[in-house]
Each structure stands twice: as structure tokens, then as C-alpha cells.
Amino acid sequence: MNLYFKNRSGWCFIQLIICDVFVSNSSAGNPSGVVELEYWLCDDDLLQLARRINQPVTAFVVSLSGDFHIRWFALAGEINLCGHGSLAAGAVMLDRYFMTHITFHSQYGNVTISKEGNLYSLVLPSWSGNFPAKNESGLRLPCEFIDIFSTRDLVVVLPSVEAVISYTPNYEEISKMNHHHALMVTGQDGNSGYVLRYFAPKIGIDEDLATGSAQCSLAPYWFNKLAKERLAVNQLSHTGGYFEVERLSDQQIKLLAQVTFR
Image (cartoon, rainbow, N blue to C red; front, side, top):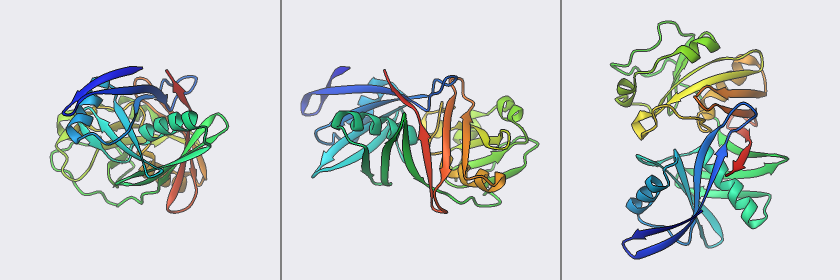
């Protein structure tokens, strides 16, 4: 898709590709726009362009001195470490430049995407949870939970898949959290997997459709809880998201997912 965008310097030609990430036979996944630019536009222009593209996230890529650099914008502003935006951008760049892997540089660290069969893989940091989580005043949590811990996000472990499905978030309360980026609820799904839902109204996403970066917090917890090195993950949003996660070390996990181009 080709767009023309007017910034302070005049009209720019923009080539846009939209990808669906974390899809499966039963999950529609999470869409992301991907735009490769010749140079960085100012922050306001990037945000306005993301709003015009009107996807949950748009990944912007620029090649500088032979290295690829990436930034991610939601409709409310710039975000950090966006898994599905990275996978979308990686899939587009690998296809465009006939590569088998690519490393994106960002102010939040480097992200490497590789093609593995019909899946794309992304290596992400493994975040250890803080127990107990720092209290968020005014946030009412489910009455029955198994664990509560924090990383970048606040994570509440519920007793069943059904409890995760039936949880009703209060977006106004969640948006006022002081210490955390988002709220997640999660539960065990059999002996080899888990489910989640992800709420981030602070960045303009009430309930995210499929969240790669959430696995930085959840996968290490469930690897230890289930004593498994590879797990299947379902995000129970209205479109659904499917992931596979693998423990690489105490510091890193691998996320594997399917990406489709529109």
C-alpha cells in the first residue's frame, strides 16, 4: 500500500505493509503496520503517521550505515520492546532483502528475527518476577489468585483458564497504575502451556490482541512452574493469539510465531 504523508519538509512517499502476527488456524493474531523510511522523521510526524495507518502498532525501520534501526508507535505514542511489531518488521525485511535473519537496533536493545521453516523466531530477554508485587493503590484485583508478581508489568496468576476468560478489567483503574506498564492475567492450560490476557490502557490499548513482550514476564514463570523448556501459549483476546516459547537460558527466551502479509 502506498501513502503520501505531509510533514514539515513537504510531502513524503510512504510504502506501507500490514502484517498479522501470532496467527494460527483458530487465532487471527495482532496486526502491525511496517514502514521503512530513508531517514527518521520527527517524533510528532511518526506518531501522526501511525495514527493515520491506524493499526495497534506501526513499526518504523531505517537503515543507517548498514544497520537496521527500529521504533514502535501505538496510537497514543511510542512504546518499547514490541514483540509483534518486531516480528512484522522482521518478516517484511527478510522477504524484501532475501535474508535469513536480521538484527534491529533500538534504544531498548537489539532484536534479532530469524526464519525457521514456516515460523519466525524472536529472541527476547527473560525477566525475573518480583515477589510480592509492589502494591498499586486503587487497583482491585480478582478475589482468588494463585500468585502475583511484577516485572515491567503487573502479573496476576489465576486458578484456571475459565477465570482468565471471565476476568472483567476496570480500564480506568488500570490506566492509573503508577509502577507498571500494564496488567496481565494468566493461567495454566494443561501440562504444556498457559493462557493470558493483557491490558495496557496507559498506552492507549485497553486489551491487546496478542502481545509478544508479555512472554518476557510469563514464560520464565511457567517454565519453572510446569518444569518444561518449551510451551504453547494462547492469548484470549477477541481475535486470539498463538505463540510458542522456548527457554534458551536464564537470560533469554525464544518466541516463535506465524506471520502473514495482507
